Image 1 (cartoon, one colour):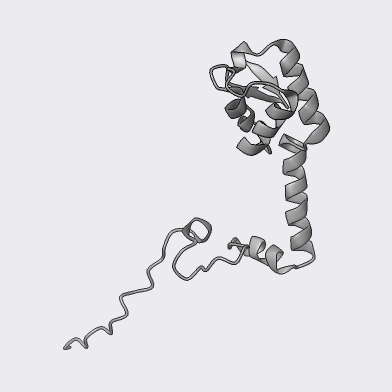
Image 2 (cartoon, helix red, strand yellow; image 1 turned 30 degrees about the vertical axis):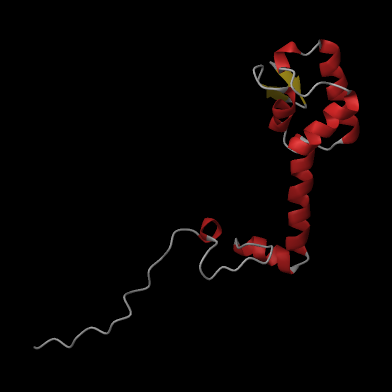
Length: 128
């Protein structure tokens, strides 16, 4: 298994798909990396030469913020928004969507399981 940015890349995957296992690298970024380094994207990870792996590692270290560094930066950005009580920070605190989505009917993943408040009918008076 190849190791890039502290992450194991599966041997049977194509290189451009394997790079997406690294947090912070998507498909487009992986394609850009391989294009800049002139590596065929259809090559399997197990078929890469050690020199190619070293080139990929160095290129990623020099040009991108990935894995723990990126996760730390994202969490610090969210923490800053919460501390300055920005609208987006308040939405994070409340556990609600922060990018303008409606929450009346949707947003179940953020709001949790639906809670029914009752049928809405008045109970008939019972004879006593």
